[in-house]
Image (tube, rainbow, N blue to C red):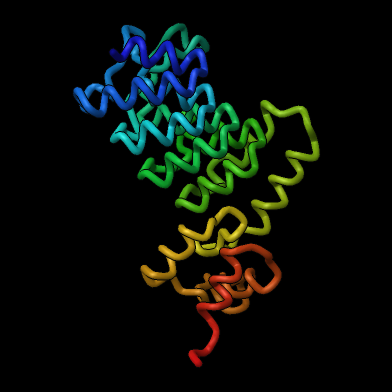
Length: 231
């Protein structure tokens, strides 16, 4: 039952959630995206609460990484806004970077930062740098919400770090440039699909390979290996 699954998610009971998801998979997988009377789905609740393990289980069962949710804006006397990317926005707003990574890997669109409901806006306001970087690595444009940086963050060093990263990444043009948030599996997929380690926006601008030269980690190593001559 969807209600019991929602209660287990809200209680943070991972074992009960796993059991409920397993029952749903066996009995009727289509009910995994059902919503309650307030418009919340199991996925949205798990994302809001930051339960990355539960989110992964839901996604692996076939739950949609996106859903439409109506947001009532009290600043405009109850006017409703339609959030077409509610789970990702909820995860970004809460600073849940592992949840954001799961959703993006399963096809959630990063959004274009065109409204206050965008995940990028939420990450910028909270100065959640890793989430901001993840969203940009999937195509979100960082300059869309530059004016909103840190509006919900009282830690100056976090604001300064985000501003510095935005400036440093200004000329990054491909997902492969984002070595700071690429794991080994995603890097392999990008390279297998033809990502260019020499890609740059103009002569002299950073390439994935030039960034990898001064970076540790599996992603940087794979990029360097991809550029090495064949033996």
